[in-house]
Structures are given as C-alpha cells and as structure tokens.
Amino acid sequence: MSGEYTDCLPDPPIGEIGGLQTFVATPAEGRPMRDGWPGLIFLHGRGECANRKTMSQAFLENGSAHGPLRRVNPDHERCLRDRFVIATPQLPENGGNVWHEHGDAVRDLVAALVQQHGVDTERLSLCGFSFGGNGVVSLADLHPWHALWAVDPPMEPPAGLATANIWRFAFGAGATRNRDAWLAVLPVNRRVIVEYGEEHGLASWRDFANPASYEGLT
Image: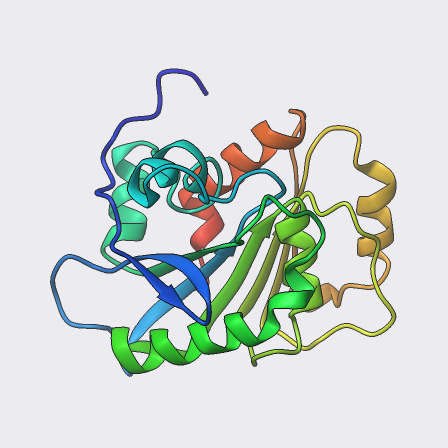
C-alpha cells in the first residue's frame, strides 16, 4: 500500500460527545441526499485512541491509523468526503475489548449526529477494526443500524445476532477459523465477506481504503 496515501482529507473538528472525545468529518458542501446524510461511526482498536498530546496531533498519529478517515488516495476522498458524515469516538485509555462498556456514549453520539449533523437515522452504520470490530458486534442492538461492518474482529459469534440490512466482515491472514464461525451464523442474503492475504493491520487498510467497501451504505 506504500505510496497510495496522501493528506487529502482535512482534519475533522474535535469535540466531546457522550463523555468521549470525538472527531466528526462532514461533507464540505452540498445538500444531504433524501432525508439526510448517510453516517459512519468508526470504533478503533486497542492502542489507537487519540488520548495524548494535543487532540489534533493525536488524531494524526493515532486516531486516523485505521478506518474511514485514514489518509488515502483521492478516489477514497471523493467517495467519502462528499457522501458521508463520519465520526470516530476515542476511548479515554488505550483499552482493549471494552467498547461494550461505552454504549451510552455511542447512543449519545448517534443522537448528536442526527440532530446536529443531519444524519439520516435509517442510513447510519457502525464499523470498527480489531477490538473495535468486537465493539460493532457488542453494540449491534444499540440502534437499528443500516450496516454493521467489522474488520478482523478477534471474537467468535455470540448467541443471537442483531438485524441489519448489511453485515460486512473482512478478515486478514490467519483468520480462517474465525471466518468460518461467522459464515455459519450470518444470514446469507445480507452478508458480505471479504478476505485479504495481509496481516491484521494491512487487512484493515485495504478494506477501509477500498471504495467498493462503501457500496450500499448510502
């Protein structure tokens, strides 16, 4: 992936929502489609929260390490910047498999995105990487999400899955056993399964940088 990334996405504004520092990137101009903008909430993995130094500097170093706001190529910018409101809440500590403890904060974030940023509640999706992917599964019942998108989550499927229009899972190298467990329980007509030969982090970069990953989310 070397050489594909540029600083084409501007820094999103920073604020506290539901007790968590949150970066929100909004379309620069234009009117939202239909009843509002499609929205994406990204949950980061362990060791990737922007909780050090100044928040803007920390975002560049940690908060954009993975997910939709990672600096990528111009095609990625056009796909996202003009079409989605994107929010990336930051845990107060590096944490781990703890997103399930922050459901109230994510619920407050959903309300803020709808009320303050014009997000269409029916086209709001939750995505995450690694332990953030676990958070996607753990918080699946929090809202009637349009899509649930987990990249290389280390957890196995829980008993009973929430309903979503789209379940998207991406797996890196070495995740065959975990992948097979999810394939066995995800509804066939609403699942998208992607596999990458790269290791954990590179699989995340590939999936979130691919414009095709965002098809069906608007």
